[in-house]
Amino acid sequence: MYLGTQIRPKSDDDYRVLAQLGVKHICGYPSEPASEWTVASLSRYKEKVESFGLTIDVLELPLGSRGISHAENPNIMLGKSPERDKEIDHICELIRIVNAVEVPAVKYNLNIAGVISTEPAIGRGGSIAREFVYSDVKDRSRLTIAGKVDADMMWERIGYFIDRVVPVATEHRIRMACHPHDPGVPSSEGIYGVDRVLGSVDGLKRFVDLSNSSYHGLNFCQGSISEMLDKPGNEIYDVIRYFGERDRIFNVHFRNIKGGFLDFTETFPDDGDVNMYRAMVAYKDVGYKYMLMPDHAPDVSGDNSKMVAFAFCFGYIRGMLQSVCEES
Image (cartoon, rainbow, N blue to C red; front, side, top):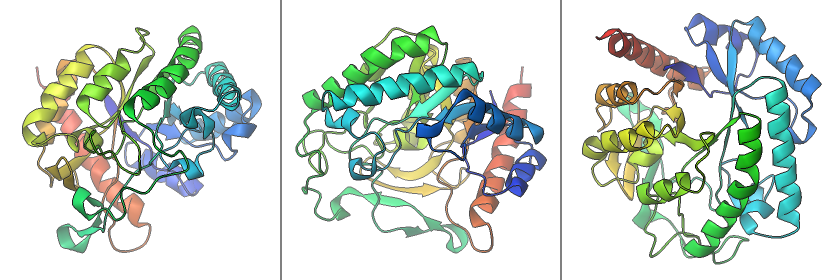
């Protein structure tokens, strides 16, 4: 396992800074929208990234974390045929292109409600941190454009996608890393009319069981999964081992929180309830061999604040990797 990032560079200097900070592996973000990807355009982008001494480990499919009203390919999770079949065909073509340029993995989301937060919290030193308190969510019974979507409907739509896309990914040896729903909410209530089935550990277990392909797995957001647990400081390590022992972890968002299910605040990695050293040892023990990356770092003061916050996280992860991986 090794240090990586999903920060989106704003300039060539940002690529240089990543290399200078010891980050060699990234999630890539081509300038063209995915609808315009070609083997030639991705090859040019890959050559540019590599000119800074960096390697693209993962590309993001146009199945993002925003709510369904802003989705690039909404019909997949709206369950509308034949429109979803056209979108799935496009996703499959993108996988073929990713294979052609020799990038080994893609990341994606399968959600409707998007990432949900409440009012931000004041973190260490006055930093601004994302917070979620379920009881504070305003009008959580309102519906999205998807209407009421119960668990059976969600699983049909997810399964329909997996059944058609994972065989193509398997044929072309592209790891498919799906992000959990963030945050999880009670299945009996849902949020915005949606049962967030990938917002629980049991739901993620069912998800990985949808296909026995070794190319079907998780973008394992340790923060999001900690948010599903009552006591993440006690429970997250067994969850890492469960999915890691089955080789279903393809990328790790190495993120910490304070709190737990339905009431949490995101933190810097050294400032939360999870023992991150113990978590990294668990990844090592299960033989995890891909990127560990920061995610959702609190906002700090000053210029280029995101890169500054991530730089702290890079150093934290890099130092911990050296410690854990050098142990016998």
